[in-house]
Length: 136
Length: 204
Image (cartoon, each protein chain N blue to C red):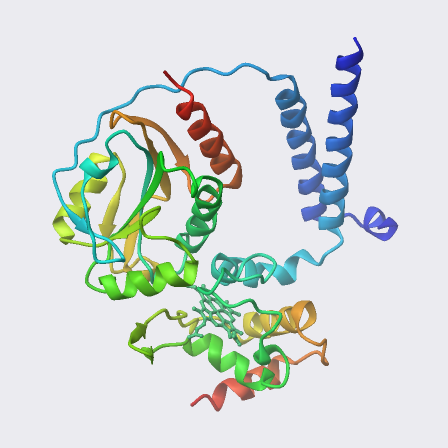
């Protein structure tokens, strides 16, 4: 009887925790995360944590901060090319996301900046489109 | 929080529904205590020798008397592979000090994924080659091997990254018999895999 009571109590705690988690999930703006979750989260992680030395974490990236104007081009062009350090060839690339619309791109840029950047001003779709036109 | 309740979004309602379902699952899980033995599926015999990230030959004889997990991936895969690798890392961290358990990932893009590329990938992941072999080799042989494990792998120019492959992990026992398939992209499935390995270690 006593152990049963304990296991019920444990279950209740787990349930409460689950509900709290789910509810807190609701308060984030879901729509904005869609572009990121669909295209980027597989490598950089749902929480931008990256994966060891394979995929860099995003919160530390300069591209979300002082190099924000280069970010749309980095995303649309990907990162390519072989890097040679010491006697090892590094050849892990980031794919290009050339077919994101400028609306999706600006949603993404603002999501990245607000979630993991230093929270600069919201970037308009026009500005993003302008940055994209001057890609190298 | 309150504001969210006043204007519940569609996502919110769906989440709440889901949460009820999950709760039901959790309650069920809490009552479970005994478990069924794992099914015994096909026996795999791989007649090929591949090469791992340390440039060492790898054949199935090395896995005799070992429990191992096999999967198929490629290093430039943009979609499910990074998630599979995140999940496989959990298995790795759990069993890396247990010599009875080994992991084996085959690249299905051997033209790009040379020993050098796999070596860099393994280093970046922070894994030891003798505990988690990343192997490359003859393309035909790798694709045949996927079939022997009952998994799909093929080239497809239209797929992201150029290949389609199964995201499953295959669990093989000490006698070379497949004991289960697990979705390598799902945390809960991989929790089950981790449990099943522990169970297999105690079998007979």
